[in-house]
Image (tube, rainbow, N blue to C red; front, side):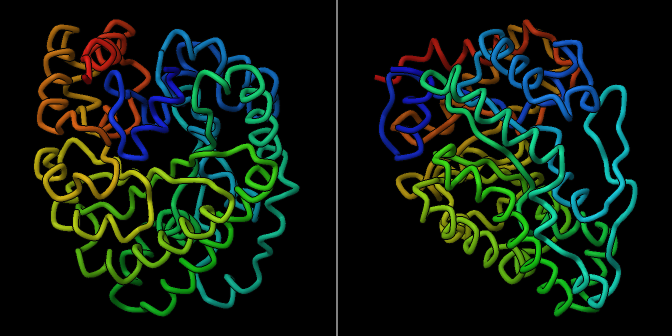
Length: 343
C-alpha cells in the first residue's frame, strides 16, 4: 500500500496496514532544510516542485503540500502587500479592508492572474506528475474564517464578532468565494483528491463555541460541499483547544479534522470515532523541537494508542512545525507510525 493509499483509506475510515502519518503543511521546515527562501521559489514552479519531490523522500510524510507557507497570497492577489522573511513564511504587511464599502470594491477574479498563485498551480501539476502516484499531493490554504480575518485583520475580526456580526458574515462569504476561486482551476483539472485548509483564527483560544457555530461552521460546510462536487475531500486543521466543539466537527462536511496538541486526543476519538477521520496531535515545539528522538517516538506511540487503531486516524503534529526541528526527531515521528502495525 502506497502512502497515498494509506491516507485515502484513513479518510474513508478504513483500517490500514500501518498508521498513516503526515505533517501539517511543513513549508517552513522544507524551505529551510532545502536551502531556499519563500521569496526565491515564489515565482519558480520548477524549483518549488523540485524541492517538494526531493524532500518528500527525506521527510516521508504521506502527504506532500504545495502552497505551505503561501496561504496569504489570495489576499495579495487583491492588492495586499507581502513581507518576505529570510526564515519563516511570508506575512501580509497590513489588512486590505476596513469597511463593507471597501470589501465591495474588491475584485476576486484577480486571483487567477497573480504570478505566485500561478506558480502554486503549476508546481502542483509538476509535483503530481512526478510523485502523485506514491504520495498524496495537495494544495493547502487558509479556511474561509481565517482568510476573512487576514483580509480585515485578526484584531478587527475579533472586535467585529461583537460589534458588527453582519460585516463578519459578509467577510466570510467573500473569503469562501475567494477560496473556491483559488482552488477551482486545479479541481476542474482533476488535480486534487484531498485539500487541507487551516483555520487557526477559529481556535478555541480565540472564539467561543457559539461564535464557531455561527461564523465558522456554515462557511466550512459551504466550502466542503463545493469541493465534494469535484470528488475532492477536505482535511481541516484548527489550532488551540477545540474540545468544547468536537461535536460540531462532523457538521463541517470535512473528511478529517486535525487537532492541536492542546486538545484531548482521547476525547476527540471518543466523540468522532466511526463518524469521521481524526488527525493529530504531537506538540510541534515541546516534543518535536525540544525533545530527543526517543521521547518523540514514545509520545507518538502514546497518541496512537489514545486515538485508537481501528482505522480513521492520521498521526500529525498539532500544528505546522518550526524550521529548527531536528531531522532525527522528524524521522522518529514518522517511524513511530510506520512501525505500528495496524493489524
